[in-house]
Image (tube, rainbow, N blue to C red; front, top):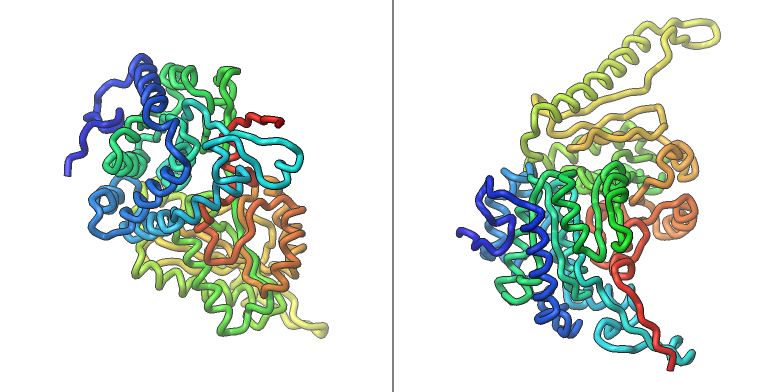
Length: 473
């Protein structure tokens, strides 16, 4: 199937994009919004989105097929990885979940349709109406599609025209989603635009900024700072910068049987989107009072990653990324070799065994003849970021408080903490994690699958986008 040229991103490679073209596109989608989108009821929009998502989960859906056929070459994700990620995302876009999202963030499902209020506000003699921006500009990050797709869904729900600026290697999935929306309702397709250019092209971005009422940015902290400096004062900016995640496994989950199950769930979190998102775990802290030690858990995790690689291969990497992984592996393998050598040189004394060289406490498991996956056990409990692409570290801790102490260098930058604990212990841990600054807590195995209504970086996604009008009756 050859896609029709509905959007700027559909044009042939090399077609010029100019500031004037961007301005014209923004004016057109704002005009279409005023004619076709602004008067639609919330429930109608929810059902339209939910039906589109349902079609994306059908194996014969034309846009899904294109995504799975062409996606690996553009995004670098293997077909199985891409398929699993898209299925998990679209499975969450049910009518029930979308209705719950609107109600959660706005207090009432009809808040975008008419003046209304929940009972508490009615008693105060107050109604309110929520309005989305006339034009929302979304600046997407890299090749991971979920955050971009969620921004697109949010803008539809709040009846905003939207311009999605994608990276040069990340436009395919958002473009196919936009086409699938337009395929069901061409008029709605006229209320959004997809563009592609190299980030930091200031004249193009200035043209888009000048037309937008609200700009959402997903990217590095440096990208957010650069865009914030260039934003006009009249526009609102919502930035989602770099975040990190990790997991903690309680001692009660470290029996031989349970530890293996936890390792299998942890492997799912690592392989989902090849560990490239903010929800991806870099480190797993293992409490040291369990039957299975942290090093033993590393052994189980390596076994689980090898099994997943057989059915869900990571896919090839650019040479420079593969070289980074190989370099990190070599460093840890050297430490492992030194630890073994030190142990072999142990000297017996009347008081016990003396090790001339301190034990480095390092062990490495890795995929043979490839960089497909790597597990490192380190006795050093300090948090270190991963080089990603299925490279994870396992460390020992006494308890949750000890794990947070050793992760203190990333405090304030943590998105998700995955827990493998009993329900009672998880309930006790949650207030501590919240006080420490964690914005999402979930079970290990679900780290990469937040519900559609999750509060990204601790903020209400819909609530951040809208403007309120209060009516005091």
